[in-house]
View 1 (cartoon, helix red, strand yellow):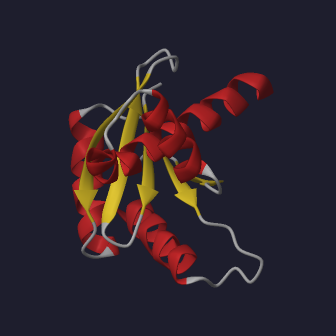
View 2 (cartoon, rainbow, N blue to C red):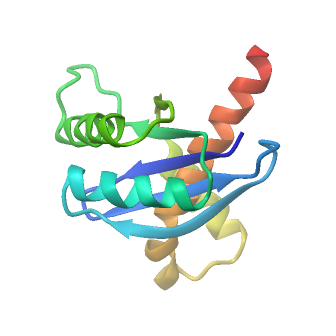
Length: 138
């Protein structure tokens, strides 16, 4: 099944997809965040174009469960659930941006270009982690 992953930020939303065999993940161009509803419409269209079977959204889990980032992501998830007919799941995204930055540095990506691609690589990390857990659980 093809999955699409999102790393929702205040300005940009990282996007990644996997192949139907759930083995290869690919970061896509980041989307601009305007509102939860606008983003959900764009993601729903992207999901339709790419024949996506499920959407994974990184959730910035906090102890208080009330951070602005967490509220923003929950609004996006609620809007997606209303618009798409595929499963929408959330996963803990803590540490994914740091992992993405490290991957990019190791790949030799210049610091000036890092900002434009880190969000989608973070979405790829979210998707990689999700798929690995999915395989382990059978």
